[in-house]
Length: 96
Image (cartoon, rainbow, N blue to C red; front, side, top):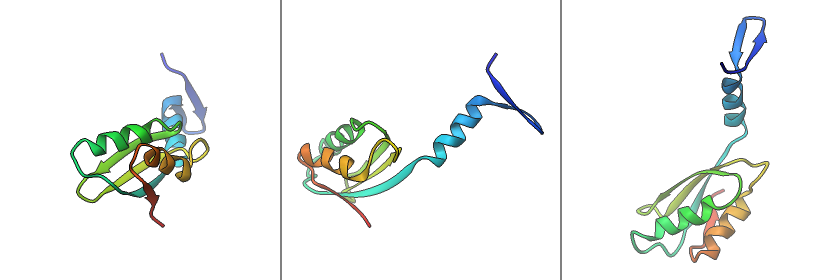
């Protein structure tokens, strides 16, 4: 049986509390990616960005030459994520 927290309206599973806290702590940023010329390029960008601690999701769009990254800003930051892609050979710049 899972843990629960008692509140005035009844019980609330702790998993629900964790999920709501996580959603509030996320930040999503879109990066413009340079040098993507083949179908394998997005895989390399995704792998590089996902290797950054705190990155939770990366969606690379080859046609638009973008990467949408969801991350925990208390652990990762836009600059570090962009550098990871740049170091892999695909310069990344966050959109304003």
